[in-house]
Image 1 (cartoon, helix red, strand yellow):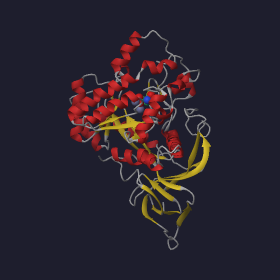
Image 2 (image 1 turned 90 degrees about the horizontal axis):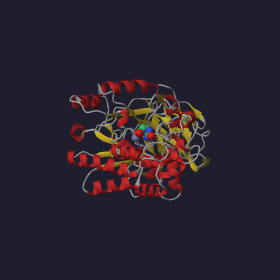
Image 3 (image 1 turned 180 degrees about the vertical axis):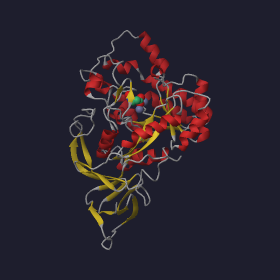
Image 4 (image 1 turned 45 degrees about the vertical axis):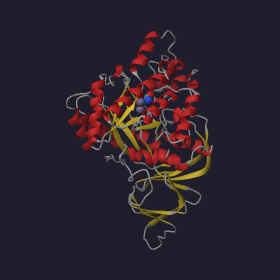
Amino acid sequence: MGTTLIKNGLLVTSQGERKADILIVDSKIAYISENLDVSLMEEARTIDATGLYVMPGLIDAHTHYHLISRGTVTADSFIEGSRLAAFGGVTTIVDFADDNKISLAQSCEERISQMQEMAIDYALHQGVYKYRDSLEKELEEIKKLGIGTIKLFTTYRDVGYLVEDREELKKVFSLCGKLGLMVSVHCEDDEVITSLSKAWDGTYFPKDHADLRPSEAEAKGIQYVGDIAYETGCPLYVVHLSSKAGLEVVRKLRARGGEVIVETTPHYLFLERKKLEGPRGALYVMTPPLRTSEDNRALQEALINGEIQVVATDHCSFTLEQKLTNPDVRKTYPGIPGTEELLPMLHTLVDEGKLTLKDVLRLTCENPAKYFGLYPRKGTLEEGSDADILLYDPEQEWTLTASALHSACGFTPYEGIKVKGKVVKTFLRGKCIVDGPEYHGKTGDGHYLKVSR
Ligand code: URP
Ligand code: ZN
Ligand code: ZN
């Protein structure tokens, strides 16, 4: 792959910023120093990054590319997902393997082999949807396959994701604690949702979605698994926190001494439930649902004051046709796109002076890399790290629109939002895969990352 020198840029990582040049040799960052001179090196390519920021490639730690669920498949498969991610400056994703309830290793290996189409790097979280006597052995096996996190649900009994029995759930936490696996949970209490829908005499339009899955369900779900995590001495990773009520439970769990790591997404920071109204409301259906502007504000404040550790996207895209076909929100495929919008949306908080770019890189590079066992190979710019590098023009102004973005779903939930700052080049392990409007990513070039926690 050769030698590339990125000169005259401003290096920005979660640790700070400085003027320095980066020498990439093959797939790694070889040297970082001021005024590197490669004139004596034959075949060294020099890229002038004057006026640009040089940043680590982002990690989207929560994606569902090519998700087969509810009798359909999402719009962005591994090829489309890799491409849109690369344009958004994301060079690593962490996706999910479902639990086939027979063998976790088999489930995991199957997903890894499907994902060989990826053009950017990827790791996996492993779903666990059922307790069984063989679970300890199965968890040991997936750990050897490079898994660092399991994913549980406190809802979706209807699709078979819920481990119902508390004692069994507790055993899952204990086993993960013993083996050093992170436990991540989608927290919405199934009982709250089902009893509410039994008593419901309203309509089932998208506008009703937020009332059918209220924030109390999230709060109760977090409390439930937070208690189990505490009893078993295990850290808890809450995925896609959506509400102020949920955040308040996190605060209480932490005050008691529990280790709770919180992830949220751009849609819970910036979009409110009003979006669910009107003829295109179904486009904004995901679970948990969008909440109120007060919830948006509470999560933004929590992000600013350091109570939230990771921002990922839960990218799970369906086409306009898939989303809009059935007017009954109980039948709407849940999920929206987001990987490509991650950096531009978070950057709006930088423009408003609420976060620094370093904060954004802590939330999307350093922290996900650390929690998911990828640091310092990913998530930073250090000598020896993978050369996953973005050249970012901080002055470029543009508008998020479906046509300016690259998802195959045909829409963006952030349509019309004006943003400042754009990725102009993306390097994956030293190879330039996005150069302005051109995509040079290659199907199959992505590496499966075995994580070490
Ligand atoms: O609606 C969503 N979030 N779909 C993706 C699957 C999940 O629950 O995370
Ligand atoms: Zn979820
Ligand atoms: Zn998800």
